[in-house]
Each structure stands twice: as structure tokens, then as C-alpha cells.
Amino acid sequence: MTRVRRRNGVETMRTIAVMNQKGGVGKTTTSVNLAAGLARQGKRVCLVDLDPQAHASIHLGVDLHGGTDTIYQVLAGGKTFQSIRQMVGHNLWLAPANLDLAATELELVDAPGREFVLRKAFDAAGVSEQFDYIVMDCPPSLGVLTLNALTAATEVFIPLQPHFFALQGLSKLFETTALVTRRLNRQLKVSGIVLCLFETGTRLATDVTDDLMRFLESSDPQAPWAAARVFQNRIRRNIKLAEAPSFGQSIFDYAPGSAGALDYTGLCQEVIQAEQGVAPQSRAA
Ligand code: ADP
Ligand code: MG
Image (cartoon, rainbow, N blue to C red):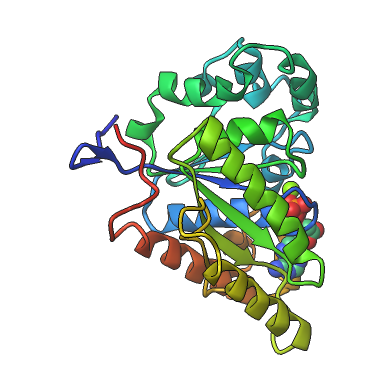
């Protein structure tokens, strides 16, 4: 069954790239639990695993042996997006990855329109009529896979672990987003920074958060990150979040009463609330 969700001629599907070129900052944990949490709150969500390490696919317990079709085949041109995505829960779909995806960086390097392959595959599959949200878990690099995510996205979420060097990496990320906005995707906005692995009550976490807010407030109002905010719901360091992947479950299935489940539920509510207003993230139909 398909349904068309349009408001004033504007598509309401939100396409979120979860991106940071650093590893270990909480991209996959945030992608998986954001997708699962939004699905629990009644949204139809497709999680797209764009990391050859396939951590998001493994986190959701998908068996990647036995010839499972993956997003690699879509980017290589052999399969359609709708033929490789699979239902992994109520309201929740996954476009899985595996190590084959590592070849994409090389295979696409000289291909014309190489940054638009994913976006075209989404459009051809009619995703905006099937899902309310697409969440893309990006690899820890700014290569062609991340570029494809940014070209297909309307929004970027940046998970950030508050430590001394976090802001330095952030400027680089913002510059990359600005470049993609200028050259490839005018709709793209950095809409939020998710503070992950947050150590409540520590001086460092408070200082970095304050610096971050000051940096955003003093930014050029024309910059694609001018509207970015630090999500109020911080994701505290919580061992259940680190344990859940090895059980192939989201935090909501693995430990529904944990601080991790609580924090990601709050984040999802905050993300949904942003649908209400003018929806700066929507792409004109
Ligand atoms: P990335 O995708 O950016 O590399 P991950 O989401 O895989 O980062 O997180 C890196 C590691 O930290 C993983 O082992 C993950 O389980 C763990 N982790 C992530 N967020 C938290 C958290 N809030 N509390 C405890 N462990 C976490
Ligand atoms: Mg990851």
C-alpha cells in the first residue's frame, strides 16, 4: 500500500544523514535507535546502512550471509532500492550493507553523476510515498558514500562526543556540508547536533557544550548550519547502548527501561516536534 503525504505541495518525508568523519562518536548507535524510536512512535522509517563495516545492519540482527542483497547492488546499478530493503520491525525497514560496499568508493570514482546515484535510486523507488523518514548511517569518512548521502538528504544530524578536539572536526564537517549545499543539493541543512556518550556533570562536557552553542550563535546566518541546534536530549553514556548491538536489537527491545532508551525516546520526540513548524528540512516536490 502506498500513500501520498503532501502538505501544500511539499513532500513531508525527512531524509536524515547521520554524519561525522570521526569514528566512535555514536553515528551508528544514533542511526539505529533514532530509526527504531521513530518507528515506535508511529513513523514509517527506512534505515539505510552506508558503512561497509555494516554495523547498523548487524545491530538490527540482519543475517548478512547467504547472498543477502545490499545497498552495494543499488549503488553498483544491479538492483532497485525497493528490491533490497527489508522489513525488520513494525514500521521499520533496513537497506543493509556488507563489506562489498567498500568497493563503491573506487567503482564510482570516475563515474559521471557519481554523487547522485543514491538520490536517483530513492526517487526511482518512490520512497517519499513509502516512508516518513529515511535515516542514513554514514561511514567515518567524507568519501563518495557520504557524498551520496548528503546529496540524497534534506538534513544532516551530527553526533558529537564532547571532548576537547570535537569542535575542530566540526568546522571541517560544516565546510563539507556547505560545499555540498552550494554544488549538489541546495535543500541540505545541518539541523542538529546530537551530544553522544555524554558524561553528565563533568566540567569538560559542560565547557564543550557551551563552546558549541556560542559557535553556532555566532555563525553566518546564510550558512547551511545557521539553523542547527544542539538537541536538548543528550545521550548519556550507558552500557546498555553498547551491549544492544551484540544482541541484534535496538535499545527499545534490549533494555526498554534503560537510560539509553529514555534518552533516545526524548531525542525522537524532539525530532518529531520539528515537523510541526515550517519544516525547513522539506524538499519542494
Ligand atoms: P560510530 O558509528 O560513530 O563509529 P558507534 O555508534 O558505533 O559510533 O559507537 C562507538 C562505540 O560506542 C560502540 O561500541 C557503541 O556501542 C558505543 N556507544 C555509542 N553510544 C554510546 C553511549 N551513549 N553509551 C555507551 N556506549 C555507547
Ligand atoms: Mg558506525
